[in-house]
Length: 239
Ligand SMILES: [Zn+2]
Image (spheres, helix red, strand yellow):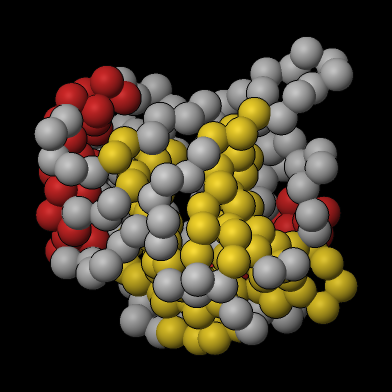
């Protein structure tokens, strides 16, 4: 993957805040990523669009309908049936862990932690996402191990990691050959920026985007990774 990607701002006729769009070059052709909002993003390549955690609070104007939808978890900022209906192209495949499939019903392809499946030019790996220590009360966790999926998305020679709601678990730390990572940070549900930075250092992607970061001080994340050789790309996910 060529890392000399450029940031392109769309021009809005209505003076709305600009939507960040990220462009990458892979051996299979260009890949474009649009942050939508919070945990929602869209990847486009080879004439197909992959939506991650579509959410009704996101602005989908100008975004192509989904050929593939990845859902990480059962919480409302990740599993939003109305948004799924809105973005889903007829015949689009919906990929989710079992806990999500049970809530959603219908036509869902279940991938659980450790599963891997090919969909056209995209290969999707489901990886664990969970809390190690944070939860709503003593002895409970916000995200139990095995319930939700982070994803490693392979396109061409490029490997993208989408963390889902997680702390810096061992399965994150030992990821291999990640080009671009989207890593969560927010309290109380996931982890603070300093812990996220420490986890990211361990698996050392080429590029990392903080996402799902509402209320977090991203300068802490940036400082913690300064000089690490990992490029931190702070974008506005709440435009
Ligand atoms: Zn969340």
